[in-house]
Amino acid sequence: MTGIEGQDLLPRPRISPDNAPFWEGCREGRLMLPTCTGCGRAHLPPGPVCPFCLSSALDWREAKGTGTISTWTVVHKVWFPIFADRVPYNVIQVQLDEGPRLTARLVESDAPPKVGQRVSVLFEQLDAELAMPAFRPLAG
Ligand code: ZN
Image (cartoon, rainbow, N blue to C red):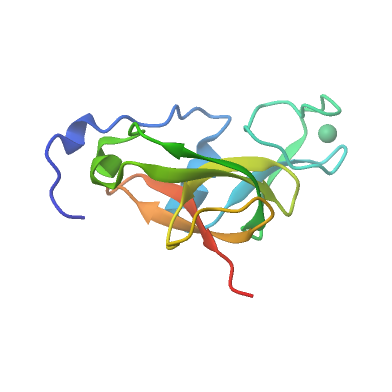
């Protein structure tokens, strides 16, 4: 990582025991989803209870990391100082193949996002401890 002024001030996502496996997975380059062992559905945001059947029996499973853009917008304000030189940038909401939706940056694309476009997850290492999911267009 190149030196970034004020990097120590990088705001962190709100990390709790409920979502720590998600962020741990990002560090390891894996998209982990809380999946209910009661009804079998994956859900985001992570929580201690399944929003569908209210079961607390959750299992963290690795997702394929692929999905379809369901909506998108252009962001003119930084989420993190590290993105400051890239403003404005495209943020997309992706309906993952496992069902839940995940909002993240669209990267490695010169064209505007399109609803229905297929994308694949990658992970941007922001500093030694924090990696954020992002998506790139899926070839084909
Ligand atoms: Zn459930």
